[in-house]
Image (cartoon, rainbow, N blue to C red; front, top):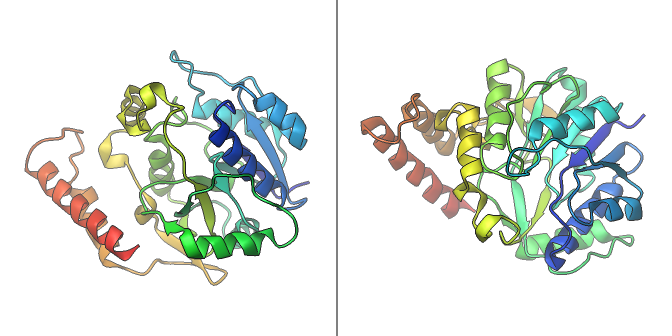
Length: 301
């Protein structure tokens, strides 16, 4: 039985660049060995053919919203029902993984029964198919050290958790803003360790545009993102990696070091109005802190 089921809902494989980076990602997951199984979920163009090509499980019968966008809850349910592994990991389909992903998951599982693992990504411009012959990890890390950029702690591209968690979720649309923030918020509110594994897990996000989305607009500009945020409970629940209460480094779970960014973020959350109104002195103060946090984050990257 595998330790970990990696599942994802890819974009259509019709755009040549999206096709390239998604194939790179899936192939990197298959390099992780027998402890990992891979599920591709959905009915997007080219998905079934890619699943057959790589010999991975394809789960097509995903529920969708009125716009035809797959629902996160259905994606998670399908993966859980089809898998037998103790751990599940949703990973965005443009993310390259390295062996430290499995190593960290195994080590955390030995130290906690319930948990959510998240972390920052490294951004890299990738334009061609990767060579996965021996030594590919070292070649990729060398390229990443030369050209890669650590992404700010405001987005989440993977979630590792025991299969018994996240069995009930709002009807979020995948690929839109808000649902990933809710994952961290929900874990914190449930009281189980919410772990930033950035120091121990290096994931690679392959840069891309937004041509696959309606109007080519970034996902946070879409109405479905606004609905996701409403389903999550509003802007005060838009938790990010800085809102985790644990960190994983050196092979152990521990309290995160209190940094200026974490202190500012706590104040920002406290000031964000619970009624969701984007007006008034509290909202204005929260915006000032958010701008300060983002500027300080950029200056440190």
